[in-house]
Image 1 (cartoon, rainbow, N blue to C red):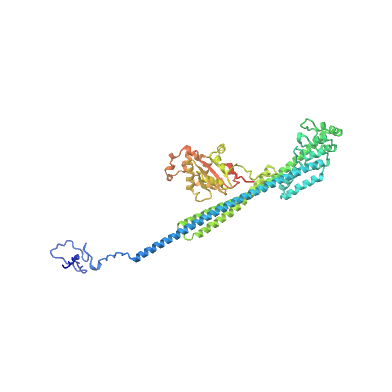
Image 2 (tube, rainbow, N blue to C red):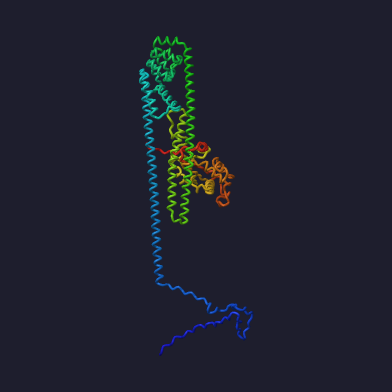
Length: 581
C-alpha cells in the first residue's frame, strides 16, 4: 500500500492590501458600500493596515549559542576570581590592621610600663636622696651639738660652711629668694636640737664654752631656749658651775628669772658660790634692756624676713603667671590639633564611603595630624611640669617651709581605680553627697575613663567634634536624666570646661550652670531640652522622679593641675596608682 501523502497545510490567507491613493487623488469607493464620514484627502483610514513599505519588521529571537555559554563561563570564572582576590585583599587589610593595632597596643603597653618603671626609679632615687640627705643632716646636727659642747669653734664654722656649700650644690641663688633660703638653712643649723630638745648654745653653756656661746649668739642663737624639763642654757651653765659662760649669757640677754619644770631657777641650782653671787647681784634692769634689744632685733629680722618673703612671693607669682600663660597657649594649640585630627579622620571616612580611589593621601594627612598631636602633647607635658614646679615653689614660700612639699600631695580624695565603684556609684560614706558638688576625676593614667566607658554611662569626649555636636550632646544628657545614668565629660589632657560650657549654651542658655547646681534634674529644666522629634521615649509622662534623681555628672581630666575655679566648684578625686618600691 503506497504511503499516504502528508496533509498540505494551507497558508493563511493574506489580507488584501489596499493601495493608498496618491496624494491628491480621491479614494476609490467600492460600489454598494455605504461610506460615512470619509477621511480627508491624504489621511490614513483608522484601523487600516499599513502599506507594504511601512510594515515594521519583527525582531529576531536571540538564539543561545555555544559561544554564549563560553562567554558566561568566562564571566563567571572571572567574577569568582576577582571576588576571591578582593576577599583576600580585604582579609589581608584586616590582618594588617589587626596586626598594626596589636603592635600599637603592645607598644603602648610597653611605653606605659616603661613610664611606670621610670617613675618608680625616679621616686626610688628621690626617696634614696631624701633619706641620704636626712642622714647627712642628722650627722651634721650631731657634729654641731658635740662641737658646741666641746667648744670646737673651728668644727662649728666648718659645719656652717658645709651648709653653704650644700646650698651652692643645690643651685640656690644669691638673689632675694636665695639669700632668704640660705639664711634659714644657717639658722636652722645654729638652732638645731637633739633628742632632748637642747640646742647648740645650751650644749655650749653646759660645757662652759663662753667663746662658743658668743659665736652662736652672733649667728642668731636664742639665749633663752628651753630644752628638756624647760631648762635654759643659763640654768644648765649655773648647774654645771661655769662662771664665764654664765656671764656671757647674762650679758647677751639670758633671763635668770625663768624657772624650769622642777620649779627652780638658775640661782637656786647653781653649784658654784661665784655663780650664785653673780646671779644674785645681777641687775635685772640690764636683762630687761637686753631683752628689749633682743626683741627689737628679732622684730627687725622678722620684718626683713617678711619683706624678703613678700618680694619672693611677688617674683614667684610673676613666674607662675608667665608659666600659666605659656601653659594656656600650649593647651589651646593641643585642643586645635585634636580638632584637626578628628577632621582628618572624618574626611578619610567620608571619602572612603564615597569611593575615593586614593585614600593613602588622606591616611598620610591623618598620620601628620597624629604626629602634631604627639609633639604638642609632649610640649604641653613639659609646660605642665614647669607650671607645677613654679606653683610648688610658691606654695613652699607661702607656707614658709624649707623642706619642700611633695608634688603628689595635692588636694583631692586619693582612690584606686578598683575603688571607683564604691566612691562614685555607691558613694560610700556620702562624701560626694555631703559636698553638694559633682566629682572631678583627676587621672593621668586614663584608667578611670576606660572604667567608666564600660559601665552603663553616657560619655562625651570634649575633644571630638562629632561627639560634641549639639544634638548628640543634648540627647546624651537627656538620656542620662531620663534613665538615671551618669553623664560623663572627658576633657583628656586639655582644660576644656569653659569651652564646653559655651558649647552647651548652644543647646540651652546656662545649661552647664543647671548641670553643676543639679537643677537640671527638675522637671521644668530638663523638659526645656526635649524636642518633638525625640520620639515617645522622651515624652513628659516617661520621666519619673526615681530615675531622674539617680542622674550623676562626672568630669574626667588627665591634667593633674586643673584650674582653681573648677577645683572649687567640684569634688576632686585623684586616681592613685601604687608603685612598687
